[in-house]
Length: 218
Length: 179
Image (cartoon, rainbow over all chains, first blue to last red; front, side, top):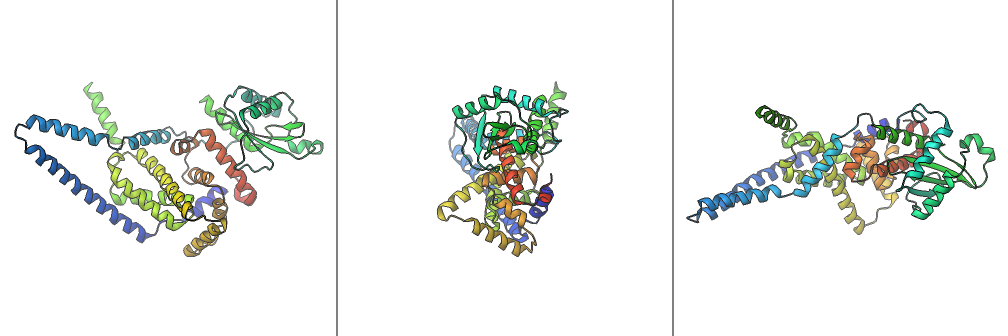
């Protein structure tokens, strides 16, 4: 399995012990420097405010302002942390887009699954469509919204033909591959042969649909 | 009312995990280093990035006492540091695929790794796919988590994973890619 092999190979990629030792020392030094800096900083503030005779109230005010200023330092980082932590905290156990059986839920009829796709494509206003001459999608261009709309009209206006393997002998011309990315995360891979087209014949596409629909129900 | 406030305070304290420098390094250095490596495919760059990330951590550690914050922050900062390093490196020198392969082979040789064929194929993926593949397959983050940490839409994460997988399927043996 790819996952196991990848993990096995990446497990061998580890930082060298001497590098970690050196880094640990640098971090300790940085920690010490921060403590000393903080201590000196406080001393300077105390001296400054202590020099003012009628400063008891003012000193409190000064410290208050100082602490308030310190608190807000790195506000962006805090915001980032909150956003990121939200993602981790909301983790859904067992979610994996490449798990699952071949078809959506209990549905095994390709035509019914195709109908689900069609409905989804019709309703999605932020659909992104990319096109490729080969089965491998990479950094190809996305279709413009107008072109994407035309493709959806074409796809949703016809009839479902079936799986490529089943109808291979009937298919003519060089296939063109479309990847339709719905705003809810559903990804549909579609292969078009001249005027005929096949939808939901790609196993991975069906996996994607399973995953996102399951997520939507939850 | 007083009880509920106490409970609140207690639960807040319970989610906080104070860690020493050694503990932080022991727990996260591997994660940060591998993530940096997955992005740069170079051990020396990965070390530079790891150092930068943990020195930054020292500056912000007071705000990073909660486990979930800490991990998410480290991942995000590692990705940013790698991006920044690669951007500057790009201006200095464009690294060809042959050079990447050479680096990987040299790394494998240094480590005595017998077979880095799979990593080599992963290295050939575009950067944006590679980092997501790593977070998904190695760190086992969910699509939702990757989306949060990469600041991408979940659909974009899924499409990147899909495309990365399609590419890998073409280059790796079928049995290596059984999921």
